Length: 354
Length: 249
Ligand SMILES: Nc1ncnc2c1ncn2[C@@H]1O[C@H](COP(=O)(O)OP(=O)(O)OP(=O)(O)O)[C@@H](O)[C@H]1O
Ligand SMILES: [Mg+2]
Figure 1 (cartoon, rainbow over the protein chains, first blue to last red):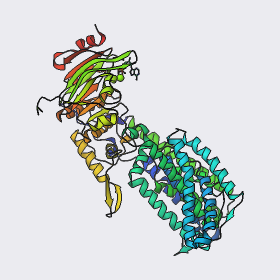
Figure 2 (figure 1 turned 30 degrees about the horizontal axis):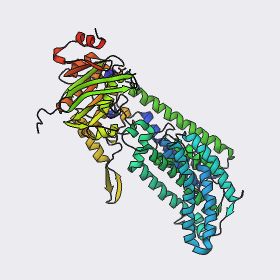
Figure 3 (figure 1 turned 135 degrees about the vertical axis):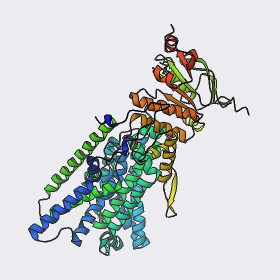
Figure 4 (figure 1 turned 180 degrees about the horizontal axis):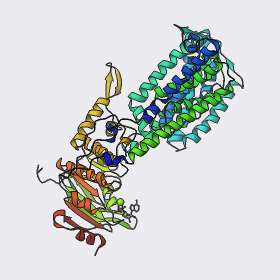
């Protein structure tokens, strides 16, 4: 028991409160927990680098092509994970993001094809992208209303919307992929400047904006408070309903952007564009240090988490391992990550009970 | 203005009925600035009903509440809070993952500008206000960024009280502030109440612990089945007398 270290209150007129527990150094476990995504990333990079050098005598990470490929790989899961980070911090989850992404990809393809003859290449792309993101926000509004007004648990509400968005996306696509004929769009999807792909730049700027939104604004602050204690947040005058509505619109908009960039990269919209990415995005958030119970998580952590997954997926291909090992590796990383989180919780829980 | 003798809070003939249940019946009391009044009484005596009727959670069935001589009527607890009546519930209503400053400003966060144009949360202002407020309560914290989950029960109570103090609550109502705490922590809360008293605030606190009541209050009001069973100055009464009032012996 550490309580024996605490001095007994002095006798006197009033008792002077002791120095707070937070003064104590963070435990080693907590430090590891805070940095786990970056540690994973470092271990993975060192591992693949050694593997690559030993088996082909070439470098893995100091190879511009590999870096570009990993970054392109990470774009869509990272965008989904960015929105998911907000939702998970609030104590919810958005299962519909994958098919909202597909819906946006299909709508972007149709809209750009429709606008191109009348508006010219760049304007058609801009307008088409706006329409696609706007359409993606519709399921977001419905998710938000279900969760905030009708008190539907987020898992169920967004699962329902997962089905609806999926069906609508396939109907709009006519059950197939929708090719886009707009060379400007193709350039955005595949072009690069100073060897950095445009879609990576767009994603980086967007993620930076989300980092600001979460860390520096009232919206972000309220999001953390709601995830930790809804009752406290509401007693302090935070409008929970409107916050949740905006939150699910935000996550849908992230998925919408992911869909547009997907359509740009592949020059086509596909309803199943985001199908395999939803779980990767949740995994990225969890590896990045967020708790599924809500109240904690950061965009920086999620970025690291998304890169952990992208490096595993690309790295295993690079070293010629059967692709099925990807699933196993990502699964193992998720489990280790959650174990670290729980160990840290146990430690800090013990501190509170003193 | 007769500010010298103006009571902070006056409750006149207040009643609250839930259907046939007279949870509070024709109750009156006065609180002066810098006065600590304890509410005692058996379970179901009407203590919580009384403070909820004062703080805007319940509408009174009849009677009136006056704040500094002005009759007031609150539709919501927020309205009471805006007028300086703050209730601190046992669950404290803190966001455990946020710092003391962030909790003090929760829902009313101050903003500043970075590089002259990007609006950002003013964390420095929050930390400074937190440090000053906690110092006012004689509670010294050095790591202002630490989440309040790192603090103990009594310290968290201090944070909740600090939030009320920062927003200039004149009357603090506490429902069993020491019930969930160990003995050293209870003493910290008692010392906090002493600080609030020194600052001229009025304090109403509910407690089942006579030790605490005698340690900190100026007066004790005993409720029994919704009516005032007795009111005593702490200096002029004993544990035995209070217990008799509570059980109606
Ligand atoms: N919302 C309500 N609806 C109906 N009856 C109520 C309500 N709130 C309280 N009562 C009744 O009013 C009476 C007084 O209850 P109150 O909660 O004020 O007692 P208390 O003194 O706070 O008791 P305790 O010490 O157990 O907290 C009880 O008979 C209770 O059942
Ligand atoms: Mg009660």
